[in-house]
Image (spheres, rainbow, N blue to C red):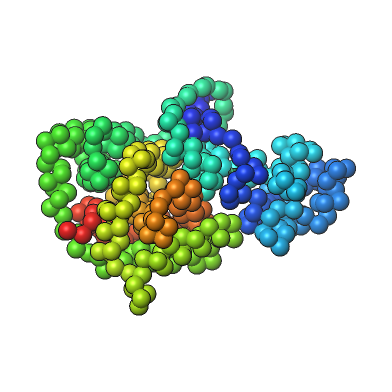
Length: 394
Ligand code: SF4
């Protein structure tokens, strides 16, 4: 059966920067080796001595037959003095663990296609997605496959296309695009429950497009009550605390820098105030972000594509939307904290905020369900309330 591989340029042009990486994936991870590769490595003449001390047989499954024993600094012992992998250098890529062979590449199959992507837990992947001009040029190639892939329902495909168009509508501010996507989710939800035909999603998209052109969407946005700073504070503190709890070893030093930056937002009594956070965002962060005018649109594009929005985990369209808004919200606060702490926002700071957040996020089990429960608890249950996460206090 003929299938397609869809590959954006941010994947095609990705190259691991190895020893120059500011947060190498060869540190602090549970690196698992399958049975076949373990046997090859322990017999390899140039690797067998090192393998005795650097690998531990665990026999949990064929796939997880052994795992790397990390050194005191948390590094994989197969790294040489130049931080280059000796398995790769002496035996070849095919001897590596599956994780080492593929990371940070991701691939998802649906509708008879394979969609390739990268995880943002790799700093170089963040750079490719956020800063490369041609990151979102897509290439499609065909190949023969017997593997069946899951079908995306029609309502979800239309919702994805319409959301992307709203996000990328020229001249439309991000907040309004996100508001429009939120409104669209109500129609998507009805279509998902077979209470309305899928064409209604497209009709709603055209209405939102027109409302944006007429300025009515902006008026609607400005009319939202954003006086919910206590709830925002509760949502932010809970998510950040949870990410800090049992955080993965990899990237912990970088996470500590963000923690210090967040502490700098507190007053002398260690209290946080969203008036202050909103003020820094408006007066300091936004002017600094002017040199990256498409930063959050790019992130949103990546997010929709990577997650196959709105088909995320087992969430409903509205829940998937609220999860996305929570991610935007957290990243905005991390950037605000960095600017407050350092008085500037370098490209390295931007990469750190996105990468560290995603490293911690991807290691949390049931992340999406936790976020939805928390948002429910804080009253962020509908479009006006959830949009207010990104609205500054009036
Ligand atoms: S995190 Fe990315 S760039 Fe860094 S070593 Fe791993 S794959 Fe390479």
